[in-house]
Image (cartoon, rainbow, N blue to C red; front, side):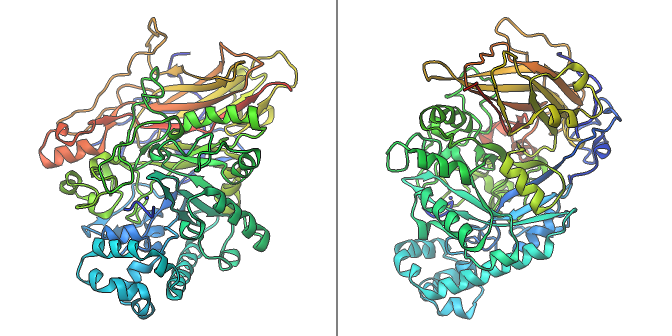
Length: 636
């Protein structure tokens, strides 16, 4: 089981206030087009294609253009939704800050431009001299400072006049006009079968310094979108129940279809996956039901760090210390202290507890990644990282703070940010209907930027023959459930088995290992977690503690190059839980790790002629993927 064999291919208050789905055969191992990064991988992948009813598509559901207030403050004055979609399609564009030509190595399959609902387009319209904006109460208050380059002073005035600006009808007119532009761009660039666009926005609430933001996505197009205006926290207040109520009412009124996606839970001050509501009151069965209805997936990784788990919460997990982001969304340098309600793994375990007591699991999440870039450029490529904000795209700027003089999280710097992430979706086709439906059924996984492919099925009678069959995915669907699904015990004494396949990104690093993360609820109502190494590259042997030794590291710190001379092109296994107890509720998800590769910190260090140690972050990382869980339910 611990070998690399040839197998069938598988397939930020207010703001941060402040691949395509190619055919399976096309995913075989290919030479690296960027020579400085790595040598060609150490082997060719199997030529046997997976016969499957679904394909994998990679995209981003969380991107801001110049129409977001904080993007404008940080000098994004040029990248509008049209440009954002062009960049995501693989076309060369101009960076909004340093004005160099930038381009993705590979286009995305889908994209949602999700600008902040709050004051959507107001600052940029004032800066552009739009007559309606300039004549508005906001324009009269802010234009002089914006024209003089005193954006943060204007921002401070706006915060002090929020109530008055909310009552300014011209602001509503501006928001409506910009929302119309967003609709136009999404409809113009939507190409079913080739590239999918989604309409959406960010509901940007901060409560007592806690990031409780949600991304709202629509399955629908212009006909439904033109009947609404993005609903933000200025209308709702900080409680997500107000957002859910609006989604409920709007769905009934116009027949639209929505989901909401919690993001950046790692800086939620323990509130995102709490057993209590924001007022500190224990959540009720009704709360659990409406949360579960509107929030099927969660953003587990993005530029402001990784939200899977944390060393403080998972001390026995040697890979939990990954892209830890320590800065709260505050104008001070207050640090985030990891709490169980901040991290998705713990949230999944709390969900098991609440299912037991309330009858509904409000935190039954599938997993995705996305960028949260405010450049309008959806880019999670490590060596090609264009920054979260336009100003942190330049190496020299990364050392002086994300927002000079203010700062997202006070002391946060560009080197604290990660080049992440991507949403991977198993869907029947590249279209709004198919991808959105996959979101709803949670057949998704998150990556930190890599385009490795991973399949995960659970069932009651899988065999090694099934694992090695050319139509293994069809078998997985027919005789089991995919990631995001439920395995319900109907009284049998069988132990479930899980089929896992992972194939490296054809332009990226080899694979180190595949792990299965288990969380469960014992007979006393206490939750537990355990990480299993289930298959790994090479001939490594588990040590006395049951841990597989490190894969090694080929990164040259002087050149920021690595070699694919270690690791595996493909890894697969059929696995059963050795500690399975049919009476206990549990979940299982897959984590796939690549071999170490250079972090954007190291690329900057080499470019600047400095030591990476001056930047306060690691020189290397192990890119990874997290699948949506499969939940096990005991017999009732």
